[in-house]
Amino acid sequence: MSIATRPAHAVCSICLSPFGPDDARTVCPACGAPYHADCWADNGGCAVYGCRMVPTTEGLKPLEIPPAFWGREDKNCPSCNALIAAVAVRCRHCGAAIEARPEAKQAYERRLARRGRAPQLRRGAVILIILSTIPIVAAFAALAGWLFYGRNRDDIRKLPGSVDGLYRIAIGVATAQSAIIVLAVVGFWIKSSLR
Image 1 (cartoon, helix red, strand yellow):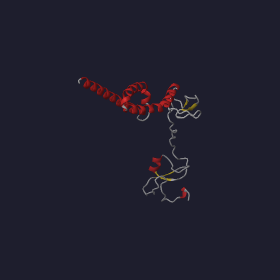
Image 2 (image 1 turned 180 degrees about the vertical axis):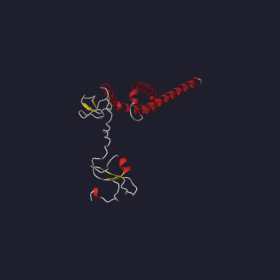
Image 3 (image 1 turned 30 degrees about the vertical axis):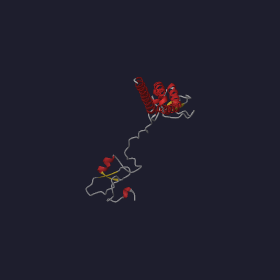
Image 4 (image 1 turned 90 degrees about the vertical axis):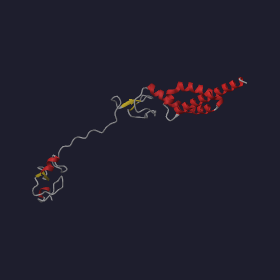
């Protein structure tokens, strides 16, 4: 049964409700589909797929692209200087691990050197903790810990985990242990000199 030959009790093509005797009706001039006048007006045209009276829709916006850096969608690998995507974290040419944001060659080399020193700095924290608990070498551990931590503070603080805390605890324990030893020696000396 075509749209034009539908019986009078047909339904609206938009709301699919039957027409009442007092409902204002409209028929699509292109395909003849029946509508309530309000449904036609609200829709802005026909609702039948493929009809030329279908209202125009807003164009879809392009997919959101991750923001490019400095207006570029690519960057040079700091290791091999090949052109890679701006959001890449590994170079597809040389395999170097890189930051997602562009960085200068010097910053990349510093970060790479810091990453290479990380195991040494972690081992240093454990050794310093051990030495700070041994009373005989606590003074040496305190002095060496203060000097080493002072020179490498930035690299130690950028390490993940609690390495920075381990260095601080080891230096604190070694300093406290050294102070206790010094007080004990001074007390023993004073006590022996009073006899």
